[in-house]
Image 1 (cartoon, rainbow, N blue to C red):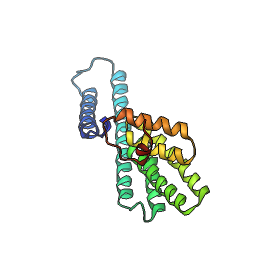
Image 2 (image 1 turned 90 degrees about the vertical axis):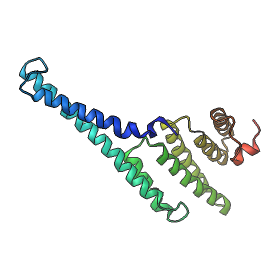
Image 3 (image 1 turned 135 degrees about the vertical axis):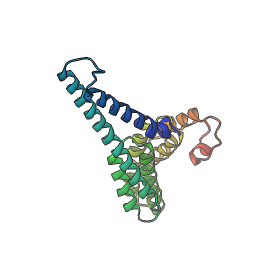
Image 4 (image 1 turned 30 degrees about the vertical axis):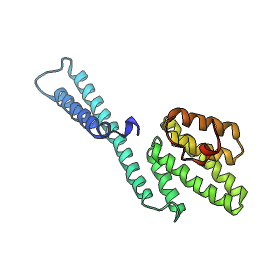
Length: 193
């Protein structure tokens, strides 16, 4: 649901760039001076490309590691062992802090805890989880501000924190992003904008 979820951006483009850089490195090393310049400039170019490739490989490794941990977290039911799920999601977020799905799931986990505490009458625990949910949803929105479901969920947390103005702004943003979507959230049904 965003451009960064496209498979070609994760695999085809980095693969192309890796082999292109590998070819450039080979050209820098070759005896046939395809690239003009002194030996020092060729060595400097060669080292620069190797460092660039190393950073690229490390970046891809971090994203892959984050996906593996996120997959493990998704296998844990949100209702059972929520502490284990939270730990896995936080580890995944540590590997790739810009992953919108991880932040959104973390916010949803805190929202479940928030609703559970609200129904049981634990107001301090509800407030604590609502604040965590708002923070997680805000992180998710930093990664993808066009994800209307995040605005809806954050509005629910704002409403439980009695921050009505922020909740109304989030509802309006969600409706601006998806105006023709039928209301599924209880917040949309109770609030006619």
